[in-house]
Length: 251
Image (cartoon, rainbow, N blue to C red; front, side, top):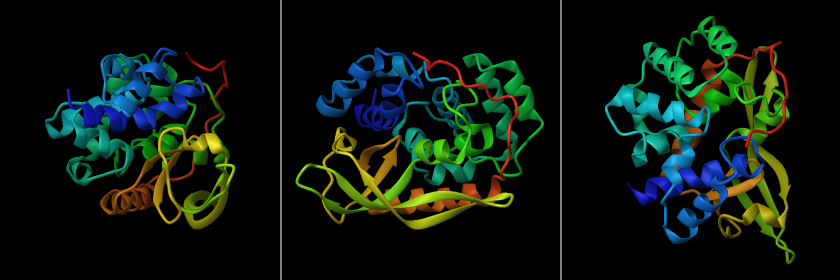
């Protein structure tokens, strides 16, 4: 297995898992060892228990003829890359089939069949907006706060205080009528523990996910995340689901 690929997946999977939203509680130790030490034994097994992440990796891999744990496949889901240009709306069927195999609730799969997308962009943001954050696991409400917490957003680090708190200017998703729009200069303040996975410096561009700075972004990664975020917002309309029920966090 490509440890670089598994470390990337671990970075983004860490935060929701730490909150009890996705995967098993045993994943934390595996993710940290992989990120910090490059020791990634057990990471694939842990990721296979993520109720939506795993089906997306399988879907992208099947659509483009790759392994679900190839670096480019994992990168396509979390940050976007050129693999997404090979995906068609017909490949949405692959995702629904993978959801069924993974054990996603039948009522949700049936609902998703009635909302076949004109453009299927199998990124994390597509999951957050089209399927709906919290829909598959029942762990959080589907609202604009949860959307922004769960979405992978880019931010520029403005200041790091003596206590380790971080001020950033971020991209933030907002709702305007029946569409989602982007505000790209949103001021946020993050607590010291937001930097558990990486050490940012003032002026750096970073990826945010569930209150953590999970990665310092290279120029190409920032460009891809920006491009595919805007593409997804263009094609995924606002919807509401009356069936969402918030349950106890999944372990």
